[in-house]
Each structure stands twice: as C-alpha cells, then as structure tokens.
Amino acid sequence: MSKWLFAVTALLGVSPVVAQNCSADGTVVNSVNHAAIARAHVTVTGKDDSSFVDTDASGKWRIGNLPCGHVNVSAVRPGFIRMPQILSFEAAADSPLRDVKIELTPQAVLAGRVLDDQGDPIQGAQVNFMTTRIINGIRGIQSSNSMITNDLGEYRFSGLAAGKYFVCANGPPGLVANGAPSLGERCYPGPIDGGAAGAMNVSAGYEGRVDFTLSPLPAFHVSGVVSGHPADGTGLVTLTPRRLAARLSGLAAPIHPDGTFVIRGVAPGPYTISARSAQFDDRLMAVAPVDVGNGDVDGIQLRLQAGVVVTGTLKIVSPLGKKPEKPQYSLFLKSSDGTVRPGISGWDDTRTSFSIDDVMPGNYRVEFSPPAPFYLKSATLGGHDMVASEVPIGPGATAIELVISDDGGIIEGDVSVDDAPISGWVVLERNGIPSRNAATDSKGHFRIDALPPGDYQAYAWDDNTKVEYANPEWMKRNGKGVAASVAPGQTAQVKLVRQVAPPE
Image (cartoon, rainbow, N blue to C red; front, side, top):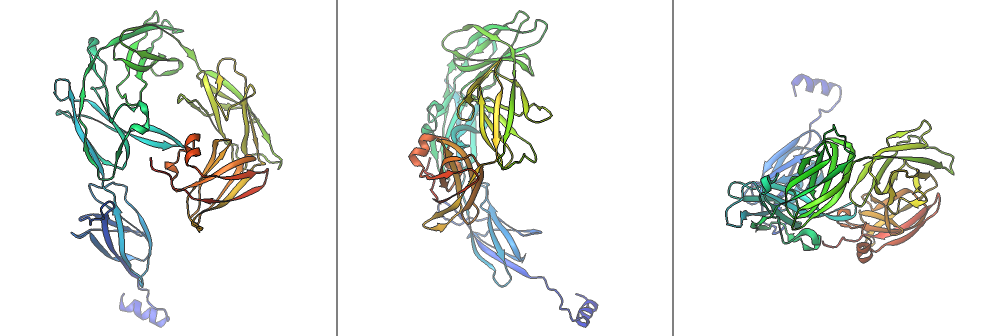
C-alpha cells in the first residue's frame, strides 16, 4: 500500500483492508491398507483459484496463502482410481485446516494373452471387459471396456474399480472370407448366459491374469428371401450376434433384385437378422431371430414393412379446474425386447390428440410424464392397461387413451438411522411396481408430490445404484418398507429407517 493511500485512509478514518490468508495440511493414504502415498497430487480449490502441491515421502502435504472461505480438497495419483474423493471445508484465518485425510482407492488390473489352438498369439483379437450394473433398478451385464490385442496377443485393462466382472475374447472382428473358419468366443469365469451370479469378484488393488485359447469354428451360410422389396431399390440384410458378449461386427449381404440374399461365413450361435430397404433407411425393415447350429440355414422369409402410425388422445381431469401451464409431454413406448420408440410426432391444435410415426409392430407399454402437479391417471389401448403390462401394437390398432389428473397426493417424511436424521434415497412402490424415487435433503427430509391416489410401500436406501428396486423378488427378500396410503389432494407422513444395500 502506498504512503498516499495510507494517508487518505487515515484522514477518512478508514482502516486499510488486509487480505486474510488461510492454510491447510494433511495426508494422502491408501484406502485399503492405509499406507501413506508419496507424490500424490493435491488440489485445493477456492472460489476464484486453485493451489497445488505433491505429497512428500510420508504422504504429507501443506499449502499456505490460501484464500479463506469455502474450499474443496482432492488428490490423484497414477495407480489409483481417477475418481478422487473431494472434501469440502470452510477455511478461516483463526482456524487453519489441519490433518485433512484423503483416501485414494487403488486400481484393479487384469491382463493376459489371446492364443490360437496352436499356441500362437492372435493379433487383433477383441477382448471385452463387462461388469454387472444396476440401471433404473434392473441388474444387467454391460460392456465396461474393450480393446484389441497387440502383435503378441496381449491385452491389459487398468484403472478398474472394485466390482463383479466378466472378460471375453473373440477372434479378429470383420467378415469371414470364403467360408474360412472363425474363432470361437471364450469368457472368464465362464459363459455370461448364467447372469451376474457367475461373475468374478474384483477387489480394490486386485491384479490378475487371464489367458485365452480360441479354437476354430465351422462356418455356414444363412439364406432366404425378402418380400416387399422394390425391384429397383437397394437393400441390405445384416446378421448380428444376439449375445451380449459377442462383439463381432455384423455380417452383411445385399438384397438381390429378386429379393434373395446369402450371408456366408456364419459361425454357430444365436443371431438377429434384419433387412432394410436401403442401408440407412428405417422406414421399410424386417427383423427376426435366427439360430445357427451345425449346418446351413436356408429358407428365411423376411417381409419389409413400414412402421405403423399410432394415434392417441389425451384427456385432462382437473378437480382444481387447472390446465398444464406448459404442456410439454414426454412419452415412450417400451418393449421388453429392448425396443424403445420415443416421442410424440405431432399434436392437433387443441393438444388433445396426437400421433406417433414409424412404430414397428410389437408389444409395448407406456411411460408418460406430464408436468406437475399432473400425473398419469391411466393409459389404455383397447381397454388394456399399458402402464402395468405390454400391449400388442400393429396395423389397425385402436388409439391409445391417456388420462392425466391433478388430484394427486403427497408422501412426505424423514429418514434416520438409530433415531438420528441421515440423508438417503427413497423408493416408492405401488402394486409391486416401482413408482417414484427421490433423494432426501442433507437432513434426511423428503417430499414426493403428484402421486396417483392409492396404497404405496416406501423404502429408504443408502445407495440407489445398488438397489434392484425393479426386481420384485429382490425387494421382497431385502426391502423393509413402510406402508403409506395416498388420498386425493392429501399428504401422507412416513418415517423411514435407511437400509444399507446388501453386497452384490
């Protein structure tokens, strides 16, 4: 501060402002064995800037001259999961941050080689690493990572978090030329057909090795006729492995002018065959399952057809005499085979009638989200409930009838453990079907509104990503719910004890 500025502030009776500096120190340790981690990179982030420092040989760190106020502290280190624990503090000049402990979780690593039946390395083999994961309350097996082997047939997956995994190896992807044998798939610990129960348990810091030997498989052809195909048009038939673990590229063949096709070099296994009127045209298509055993498959019949136009009506029932202020509606037609048809293609001027274009014939249920305070009261097609079960949709189908209402109720309450409030995740179930879920606030309070009147079961969990809430058997075995009855326009109060999701 200059002498002139000091003189002016003194004359005005104003004390000069001196910026306060804060400091922080602590250690970085291994979350498994609690050993100190040297050369970990620590970051302390304030409102306007960040400061960095590396830990010493004993895992200790210190940063001075920090701006006071709210700061976040984190650390990273090669060999540990790069999803760092982030700690939040309020830094004050008269109360330095002392002994901040940051825990890093060691990565898991899995490596190995892929060889042929003669013991030679397979370059370009595709290795897939898959994990069991719960999404929207349903446990499934999903691809986590994949890579191609090098010239020594080697692969290596690093940076893995603890969990349950499968690893599968396939021969080099691509078309099989001239009927030459392809290489079969191998998975460890075994085939994934048995589901998540057969996965290997990988702990933090695990380092394992899995080698594969792939044997030749015979190759066959799949042939048939596509009807409904324009004689002067182009078209393609594609054969794609149905199994999740099979990540080989689909085999393809053109549709000839007379509608015939032949796909060669097909290894035994389950497939989905699809035909399109043009390679990138979804408007005319056909899909069917094909199982290839120990011989050629001939006589496949595929008929191209356009998706049907599904119509529907929307009825608003409002005891409060209201209408949605912003009538933006989200609608999905979902099928258990994985087919999803999103969106409403068009509305009439009154927004009471709608249409959905290009829906492939099949069995679907409805998911529809009106804006609060409205809720979906019912969704029917030909008198059949499309919320609770799948209903056939095809040419000539009647209109979907949606009814929304604003006379919903509220479930409100608190979550605790040992009578102490605690944050968590609340799941509501109605008639054995997941209805709504929401996080509590930091004090364990929650409020879920716009609920259809009826009887519910309410559950509280520590981690919703570990809860199979869409699996009735799992919920019956593990869940401890509290009954709540929702009356139109009323609030039901519940008190929930937070459960810890059981290990996989």
